[in-house]
Length: 343
Image (cartoon, rainbow, N blue to C red; front, side):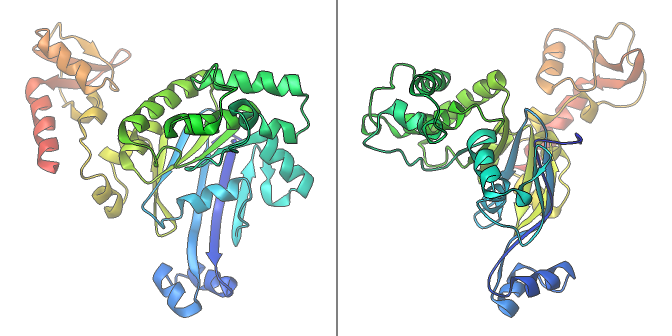
């Protein structure tokens, strides 16, 4: 972990209700779970002892079913919600220790947020909507218009600045929301199910466009979703939540291939493992045949398959000069067979 990662939450708790402190003490002692806390104290455990860090430039997905606590977590990062216990740090600063002015600056300059439903002002042009945050910051008119135009170009809406929201489709309005978050050039983006209200094809297009944009602008992104396929596609790492708790935080590959809990295993049981399998998962011990093509341990399955299609009889898996093992065509067939048995 970096010394000061862009976002770091440690032992974060959020309990809603008049007897939150009593419920917190009981939950920390292991005396109550989410259901029992509601029965005994009339309190709802929104987040329970959550800890994670978001690395610079990565897309970190938090996913879970409705009520799992994912959106509650993200609202702690810019302090829209006060925690019951725990710490939230943004770029090394304790968010809970910020005074009102510092908090406004954090929200205006360091963090941009994109919601599921973008509330655009119907009486303002697209450019004026995008530049609104800069207007609040009293940025000069010419500078904020230039920033708005640049942000609209990034999301594929160059030339639309003088239009109005009712002239745009739902997908285009969602792009305006992203442009508004980008206009102030924040270090961190918080995205709370930004594409979930869109039709599937539009949603896929925006996912692809955001991934491309993310590579270009290199923003640190905390991305909330209830959709496992979306999390697997978007996230460099994923935290899976259940009843306010983080069940596992890992790469998409490890989430699928090495689930940490029974809940995660059930959650990912419908996901094909084939796209996540690499050489190290299917190689066997032993010396490969002389002259076998050489591949690294992280080589993905499609590349290995192509080698056999090109006529290889066996593959050598090496890490530098060290031979780790070998792969035969039968090993790949066994991996495919195992995957088919899961679905």
